[in-house]
Image 1 (cartoon, helix red, strand yellow):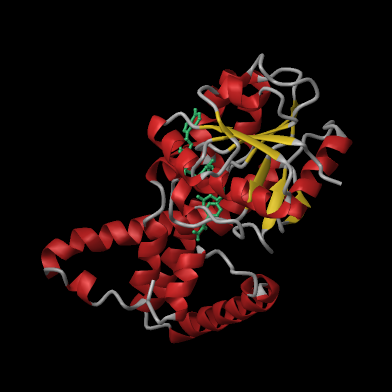
Image 2 (tube, protein in one colour; image 1 turned 60 degrees about the vertical axis):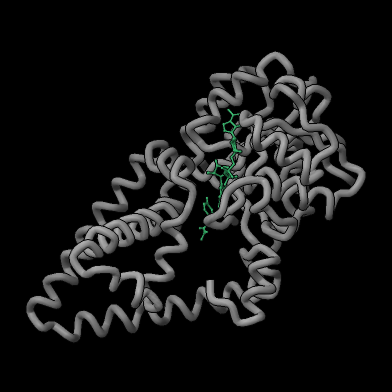
Length: 313
Ligand SMILES: NC(=O)C1=CN([C@@H]2O[C@H](COP(=O)(O)OP(=O)(O)OC[C@H]3O[C@@H](n4cnc5c(N)ncnc54)[C@H](O)[C@@H]3O)[C@@H](O)[C@H]2O)C=CC1
Ligand SMILES: O=C(O)C(=O)Cc1ccc(O)cc1
């Protein structure tokens, strides 16, 4: 059974366009409507034929939709929700894909009193943005975390869970503050570290005269992919998940200081023990992700073809 008959996607960038493509691929027959605040993105989305109707306003996009998914940066969720207030079909489920959850949920509740709101976070993405960057297999084998309130409509939670499962995602339920703490460690802090190291290296480059770029085949190259992520999106995530990120950053700084001491005092055992432990963690991450790796894990199909032809990312 198709969980929703008409889906409205607000924000037609990487995630919104990937949802549209995945719905077309996995739920044929579902009507797709959409809107983006950018005239240029709306025109490009229409050119890519991602959805059935590219509406001229958010209110028009959601009319008649039984599922509305807000796919805008977390700092724009409140204004996107206000723009659809009063235009939702009776019984419509409103969801979002924001990377942080507690603050977004509060602003959706404030903008849409009485609406059925079930927040979600597909933990799948890339460093790219815009409607061209999306692809239908993005969510396959990846987690989608739903963070419904305790008193949320259980039938609506089930329908949204069925929707994400139909797109190939593995669904998990969590409370929003716990989600924000977990993602601060697994996603937000690693991004902050990448932004920092690439920024530091770029400052040093003025001293070393382009050696940073020249010798960037090492670990630095991997950091540059993450550090190329969308600046608006990440600015908003750090401001929205401030408490959890600062808490994790405090712990990280203490651990970094501990390593700094070990290096200064020639304490090789401390370094060796940590690196042995982290090597094991990588192995278990790979083992747990085996099924995912086989499912075009996190790569645009064109990138996949490039990688197979030996092109380095
Ligand atoms: N990029 C990623 O890897 C992931 C992103 N997310 C979350 O998904 C959301 C969207 O991110 P992306 O698709 O990557 O960004 P994107 O930049 O590719 O697309 C966002 C789109 O939203 C539009 N927009 C901004 N404000 C709007 C408004 N008020 N009304 C209508 N449209 C508006 C922009 O014009 C843009 O086209 C963010 O909340 C992000 O935290 C979640 C998982 C992964
Ligand atoms: O590109 C990567 O490695 C990512 O980590 C993508 C990503 C970004 C934000 C999310 O909330 C979830 C996934």
